[in-house]
Image (cartoon, rainbow, N blue to C red; front, top):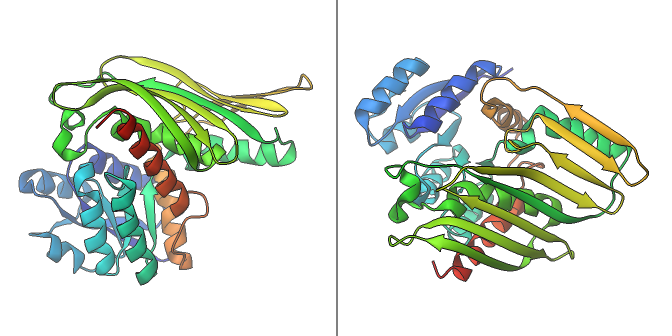
Length: 317
């Protein structure tokens, strides 16, 4: 099996988590790290037993197969473009851009170069999600008509989530999970309404959204930075309901209730932080020569960002 050599852009907490979870990935390693914070990059390189690149071009010109972008959202699109133009496969943290329009420029380059490009969205690759898919193939719940989800994470005021100029806000940092869930089950949105609490710095501290989708489904979710809350997730369909327990973004337990009275409990423990499932999927795609994930497609990424764009527009952000 070909060893996938990674270059990491960024040196924050998510970069450290990525490197830590690589221990669960077969035939994958970090070869080089670059960050504007050279001290943090050096410390991270020691953790990964990797080299430190002096600048971005040095990293992109180094001997590696893929780039993991672990910076703040406002830089995601620019770094993705640079990496793709250097013919490197890209796994980019969510949201992959600050708007759907910005993401389209990246997706266009990915298509033109034929390079693999994927959003780093971990839930769809967890063992539980695979178990759910297998069970629903055996006994479907029918057409999904309603998706509800919600969680909020109390976030320190010095965190980047509170900074408008780096792509902060509850919708960008937490709502992106909910957008993925809604689009994954219901498809592209046709309308979005949203209410929220907006700070003096033009940051959405809390947002609650109601969405309608092209296929006729309806979604509902909330997200926030200034309170602690979680209501899990529910996917309601013609013949049954799928319920994911509270930490549904790191899913471990699910309940399927069928209209005929049957109930199915599913539980699939996961290892580490759960990032390695998406990393393994990406590495397998890269080895096969694929340019897009069949599970987390480019359309899911673009439709999720379009949902957030319309929510922010509704909040006058």
